[in-house]
Image 1 (cartoon, rainbow, N blue to C red):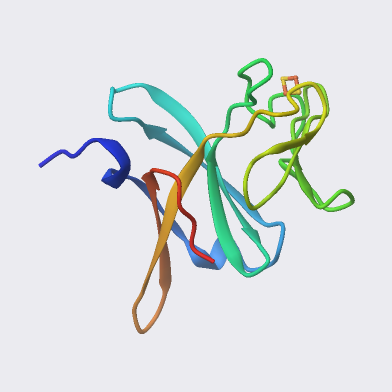
Image 2: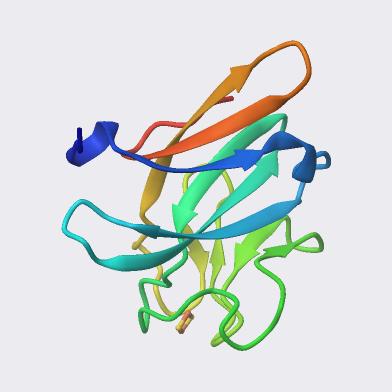
Length: 129
Ligand code: FES
């Protein structure tokens, strides 16, 4: 069965890849309309925050012109193309040419069993913290 909208599972990520604040894992996903996207998930302040990897300024991936998505110095997500900074927990642009706009947030849930923690990422707008 295929679901659409905010309850559609996009991908899963092994939480062991996100042990420290500022760790980022990227992934590819297909939305409910069949369109391909890049996404990423960030560990920050003991929570997980996932976004579509597309800057609201020129619609390029944040890491299009450099490897980093999170900048530890500014404690913010960063677009390497023109240097826009985004608040890690909301995706709101806090500096740069897209002030007032935001990254598209994806919904995060975790599933824990005896041996591992798997993070599930869905279409939608809530986060696990
Ligand atoms: S494309 Fe991201 S700041 Fe311009």
